[in-house]
Image 1 (cartoon, rainbow, N blue to C red):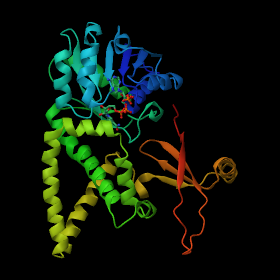
Image 2 (image 1 turned 180 degrees about the vertical axis):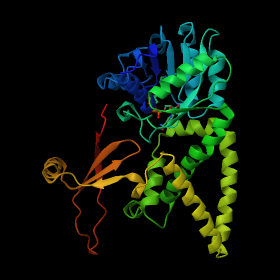
Image 3 (image 1 turned 90 degrees about the horizontal axis):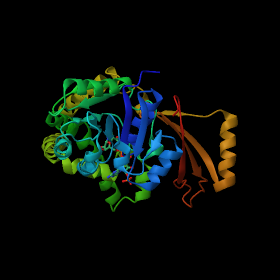
Image 4 (image 1 turned 60 degrees about the vertical axis):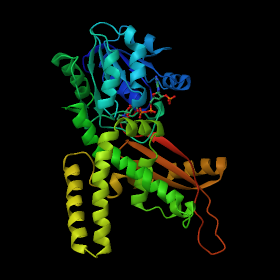
Length: 372
Ligand code: NAP
């Protein structure tokens, strides 16, 4: 176990990222104590039950008392108000940092509240999933990922080094850039792709000629991947688009132009143009794999396999007895290091002889690998 880098770390916001951060800091012994706070009493209770932090505080002010590192893990839209609330209680010499997915506006909103004897080192781990809440906390979430720090005045090189050392101890590589550059890069690599996913799933859901059950029944790999992204937290993503407006609109403009070019290529049977583009994009996928940011496995590295026969039967019997499930499927989502067991209802023959769509009920999840 590593030497503690901080005496007391306060984590404000105990959702996916805050809880994952707290859990991994504790796991690696990087802080003498990890104190957590979330606005939701229910989340505080769940975080306590899951032992995400050493202590759950009752107020944000209580959480940051004597903390030498304060990590803000709330939606970007409330970063400013949280900073304002905790500012009077921040200890002299403390570092305040965050995980917000947008940096320019967030820095603008936090900075005015930070006392002179406190350092602000904004950050953004490029790691996460479409899940929310403390139950989604994942061991090893930041391993092999990048964390971008955007120090914008008000902190020393030593402060930046301390935050850098923390993320490195969690297994992340650290890059330093300006908030503006961060927001532009993330607009194209993360924000616009999410907008496209929200849009395509919304369009499919609105189609009047195709019923929703057909969309789900015939969902092919591409559409399924979009639905996974489009299941991301609505509050978080609303805030991201509203706070990174300029960069997203800039990238969306370029995207629309390129989409029109593709539309034209299809209309005019420009097979060569389509082939060239798809060859270039395939090379980008290869570069991502070569950089160790994804796996070269079919279906984006998801594991589709079967459990041992005995365990399978045991789960099926329990499912049948409880809810009438009679099908079992196992998947592994490498991005979140979790196995998923899906139990489906019995599928009766329809009058046309085709099987109606199996209705998936309450997927059960179990952590895999390193555990919590
Ligand atoms: P999340 O799972 O929804 O967690 C956010 C938590 O903050 C929720 O429990 C929320 O409570 C709580 N909260 C909201 N307002 C608060 C306040 N004023 N004071 C204290 N707690 C408050 O979201 P997340 O995915 O962890 O995202 C948190 C931050 O990480 C965001 O800034 C996001 O941009 C960033 N981030 C996310 C990802 C990702 O993939 N998810 C990746 C990198 C960075 P309620 O549920 O009651 O609102």
